[in-house]
Amino acid sequence: MRHLLEIDDLTVDELHRVLDLATDPSPPRVLEGRGMALVFEKPSARTRNSMEMAVFQLGGHPMYIQASEVGMDVRESVEDVTRTLACYHGCIGARVFAHATVERMAGEGLVPVVNMLSDEAHPLQALADILTLHQEFGDLAGRTLAYVGDGNNVFRSVALAAGMLGAEVRFAGPIGYRLPDTDRQRLVESDVNIIEFDRAADAVDGADAVYTDVWTSMGQEDEAAQRHRDFENFRVDEALMEAAGPKAIFLHCLPAHRGEEVTDGVVDGPASRVWPQAANRMNAARGLLAWLLGEVVDGGSGT
Ligand code: CP
Ligand code: NVA
Image 1 (cartoon, helix red, strand yellow):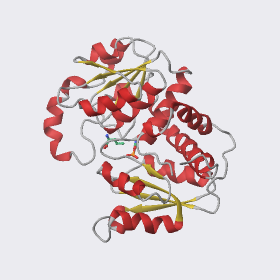
Image 2: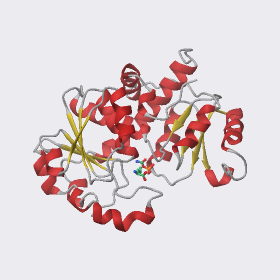
Image 3: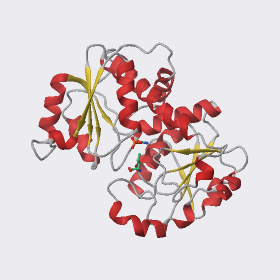
């Protein structure tokens, strides 16, 4: 049984295959007559909508479930919720606070589990990110992605994805918000090396793409005031995009907190690709599910 809990659950070849399927003009109806449970512990605009539409386009029935409704570890255990959902659905997606929750779901080994964002990873976002970069630049080998801000779930996943496809990955963020050594080791295991900078302007110099995410992720609201102070020098504004160079594009997973990690002028400016990137969430999700359910599960190449 295969799952997508983090990008390195895929090999480089599988990443390429998912990207190919993401732009397949005739999506295979791999979910015909089947459902996909989409469980959310946190709010979502892009992930819920893109997943529901991707499931629909593959012939399946998406079922949105608020975690509070099924009461994971409240009404019954995460394991019993998973066993129940697997009675009706060919796949389970979950957006959770603790990454361990998606690991526990996957550990049941009943149906493929897709991480729709945890405190550690956002692999579906990373698939859309590399699809957007691929559409812009073609082969990512030799391209440079500079991420400015919090070394969070979005950064971990996009660093893995872009790095696995051969891009140089740079990071600039305050001390205390960088990836711990354990994460860096995991990246090294996928041949991904992150180059860290103290100053945002140095990280973006000559980069092909500049990426940022919110300073305060869902679940960290109590830290917002401190984070605003700590991240003040890591805002992506027009001056930083100028430091990157005239060809650099701007990416953001969204939602953007305009005026905090990014200015209106950048989000709405000529370098911004945030809307194609958001649109690619549906394409990437469809590619992932077409591969996972059509070629791994039904194709028999799963283990
Ligand atoms: N980028 C992203 O995951 O957006 P949502 O939180 O709206 O799903
Ligand atoms: N890092 C953000 C991403 C939202 C899509 C969060 O976890 O809230």
